[in-house]
Amino acid sequence: MRDSDKPNKDEVNKPKDNVYEQESSDLDEAAEGQEGDEASEGDEGRKKVDPIWCLVANIAEETEFGEDKQIKRGVKHFPGGAKVYCYPALWGDGYERVKVIGRHRGSHKYVTMIVPSKHLTNARAKLVYSPYIVKRLKEHWDGSEKSKERAEKSAQWLNNGRPAGEVRQSEEPVTLLDKFINWAQRLFSRV
Image (cartoon, rainbow, N blue to C red; front, side, top):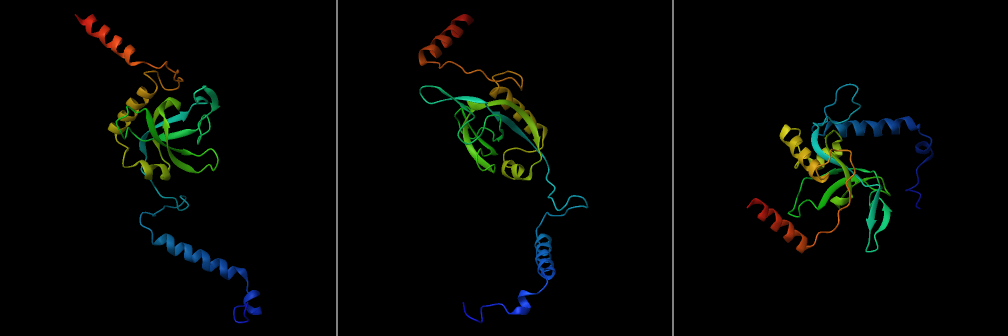
């Protein structure tokens, strides 16, 4: 280290208050320059966000995993019982796989993942106020009554027609032959 790079004694012994005041004033100036950061007294600088209706569910406490159907607590990225915020159906798979936002099992940070819908329980429509969640879901959900109804219908479908709060029962796999038999029975029962 060269002598010109070393701080002199006066700089080292300077009171720390001046440094703090400079840093905090820089932060204040940066906050003033952001749009939409108008906060009233008592909000402590938090952004005001309009809530949105969203489909919210929990990860099942126990899930089957693998060919030998081992029982695991939760899924790979979310612990059992974790609250997740669901996107609406995004692709045509019948909502078998759902894109969700939730707190990761390890880092506890919000992450976006795709999970099988069979691992979701207690689906319900809920108003969401979290700025992080609202920012990511506002293109898909909003605060309207129509959005609330869509979330309620999705929740009912995820719960297999059961009221919110009841745990979804695992279903036996249906073969193509079973589907054909059911279709034929419905067809001939009308005649």
